[in-house]
Image (cartoon, rainbow, N blue to C red):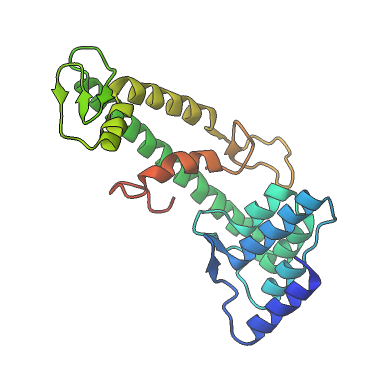
Length: 235
């Protein structure tokens, strides 16, 4: 963000705005870091840290995770935003080691809960698809107001709904379940084993892309099930 944007933000905070307000599924601090990091990435200009500095100066919590689960440190790490990382570490002060360890442990537990939840949902979907495929055909088709379920045809659907139903036939669902299982297997936990990483050493991360675990792909796999009663609330 430009210097004048940081000055405008400072005026708002001085007038009583909440520095930990949530905006677009991010806290103001994670949003500022994202804007600074992405802006430098898109333009090739040097990183700036104006808005991050303003928010921290007005009391933004340097350890408060966004609703999606990403902390300011994790957001800065994504972009290699060393200026923001230095500021965050300074504001976390002596609490850094203990709070990071606790947060890393919480992240691993959250990821493990998500994996177990996703495996259960995929098992359910595969079982239901097999039970719907009584004659082994597995492929449904729509013809106007009618859906051909292989074993029988059922009429009375709106044509759009008929097409939607046929699109989700057992064969398609089983292929999708297997694809999701492969994605889930790729994005498993790579525990910290002492190999130095930037900016953190000994970090629990995703084996596939090296992002903090649970990574975005794992969170995206879980997101369609957010209304399920067993969805891990911490995710």
